[in-house]
Image 1 (tube, rainbow, N blue to C red):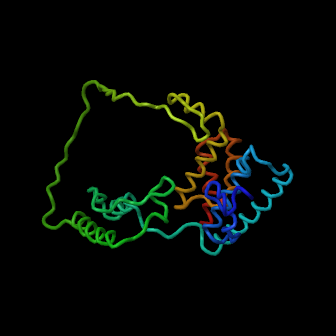
Image 2: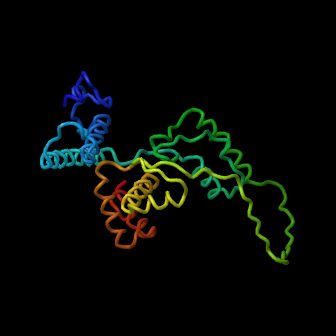
Image 3: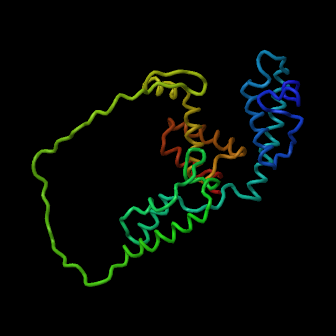
Length: 260
């Protein structure tokens, strides 16, 4: 480990200061990163001496078992997701469903925090004094909109008819630069090349989509012990040509969703 000792600390990683307490979130994240980099052939680097393939395989199997066991124990004792407040959209929908109000009360509430690309992850939805003050402002306004006093308005029946041809207008906006670069370094010049790059590895695309849907459905990102379940989901939806309906069905029937 000469490249990751207290002197070199390549990549900011110093094994001499890292313990193997996988129940500690900070230590666990570091060892997950180590597992991923060794699995992907990034550690040790290709220009350095490397262990035999059989040794690497045994190391990965042992570390994977330790990480999975620790993560399962943490989920059993602490649960998968944090209890959280409603975000602004959910609060607005709740007011509409409960009170039948139409006004948009979201501007009265503070912006929601985001994590893993979503605004409904528990770790990013803290409750501060400004949130309580905003709720105390928005709720009475919604109640005033829902509870009407005074005489009932006069009802008048009216009929509307559709006449004449319908015309559709399409407004062209400014040219959009759709070029970019994938995480693996592959470049694309437009949307079609980007689409082709994604479809070149449908398993990876399905796995990434599954991870994001799990995050949205459970309010927390996938845990280490969820990896095997996600791989199993991808294996099953591959048999159904990666259908989105099949993917949703597999997620809500998975232990990730049922045991949250």
